[in-house]
Length: 113
Length: 117
Image (cartoon, rainbow over all chains, first blue to last red; front, side, top):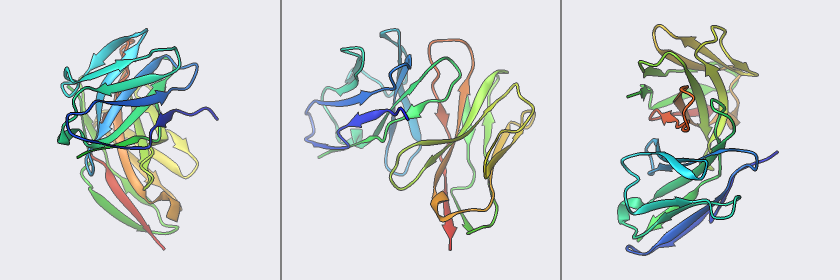
């Protein structure tokens, strides 16, 4: 069964460092997303990506964040200068046509120290 | 803006019993989708069931079924014959259907379900 794959599963970084979280969405999907879940809290939408551009972003997704689909298969989230409050689980998701469910990756746990 | 509310932070059920998790939402949209996702201790997000708002019939997936009350904006999840593997956090989620280029999910705060042996 096709699945969304995220790497790494856990990343520890120092405050102020740049991190790149990687995702391989399901191959025939067209819509890609990043969500964030701070420990013990709800899952929050960060950004959606369609047709090689950002289609919507939340207020959380400020200038420190960027997304890219560099080679037609990977989908990355970059945080330029990490802060302690960026510590969270980051989920990548993808979906096919409009209205179909999103399939989530297993998440990357980011710890900023 | 849409909001999703789950008023039960935690619930407990005995194995083989039935439990119902509540979810209400607020929207001015007439076309949308509703979902229940399960997040076990591994923290992976797994789709349990989905409901299209235009369908009057309640969705069912094996032991999981929903009670969708569109007028009341209520979308509860019923788990029958609860199993130990059902222990997880359950999130209710809303997605509007507008033909746009984003299908973002709006999640509730979750209900932590513990199935007791």
